[in-house]
Each structure stands twice: as C-alpha cells, then as structure tokens.
Amino acid sequence: MSQMNLTRRQFFKLAGSGVGVTSMTAMGLAQAADPVFTKPYKLEKTTETRSTCPYCSVSCGVLMYSRKDQDGKLKVIHVEGDPDNPVNKGTLCPKGAGLLEMIDSPNRMKFPEVREAGSKEWKRISWEDALNRIAKHMKADRDQNFVEKNADGLTVNRWNTFGMLVSSASNNEAGYLSAKVLRSLGVVALDTQARI
Image (cartoon, rainbow, N blue to C red):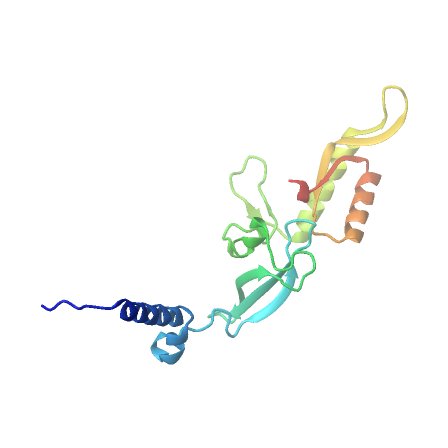
C-alpha cells in the first residue's frame, strides 16, 4: 500500500473542495439537483388563516395553516407567530407556541358537560341547558348570600360568595360590559385569566 504525499497547497485545495461540497449539500443544492431527495414543503397546499392567540390580553397574532384530512374536514397542521402583527412581530410565548397541542388535545372540552350530585360520570348537555343551570345556581346563591348593608348600616350591595373569572382574550368593549354587569350584581371577586 503506497502512502499518499500531499503538499500543503494540495491539502488546502482538497479541504476547500470538501467544505464547498458539504456547504452546497447543507443548503439543499444537492437535493434540488436529485429528485430522489426532494421532499414536499410542509405547508404546501394549506390554507393560511390569521388569528389571535386566545391565552391572554396581549393579543399576539398567529398564522394557522390547515389542510383537509381524509374525511374532508379542515385540520390545523401548523401554528406560528404572525410577523405582520405589530404586537408580537412573529414571536410567541411558550403558551402561544403550544397552540397546536391545545387545538389537537383529546382532552379539550368542546361541549358543556355536567356531573350530577353523587354521580361519577360526566354527561353532555346542550348549551341552553348549561346556561340555564348556571343562571339558576347564580340566582339561588345571590338570593341567599347577598349583603345589602354592613354591620354599621352602610349600603354595600355585596355578593361575597360568588366569583367570576372572565376571558382576557375579549376586546375592550366586551370586557367593560362584563365588568359592569358583574359589578351591578354585587360581585366582588372579579378577575381575568391573564393574571393566572
């Protein structure tokens, strides 16, 4: 076996050629030339939809990409920050970056459910039934626990046994109206999910 003798100049030429070839491969030029290595673009044939992250009141913009599945239903396959949104300029916090997992979660609640007293099972009910049940429970609790005057006889109109956690993804008008309605009922414990 003969030993190969390289001059310094030949070594640098050979090393430079190797770096050039690996750089072109890393940039995808080899894949473009060889159809065997071509891979379809992940977001090819998807529908892009602009939306707002639902987690807090910062209102970061998101781009949601969906594609029809085997059943013909649109399915979100990718979520990323919207670079054109002036609030987040394409960035997302960890909660926003996990939006796809929230959308696809098998534990995500899509319908109202109730567990009757003494039961171990949850049963699905209609939205109308859910809202009626909530209203009845609220009225019963308010009728029983509403404090009109304190010990000194001062009018306070408080409902201390009820609390409300409102959505921070609501716009200003909806948030203002929610606060006004709840305060008019005497609700003291009122907060928003953005602070959790």
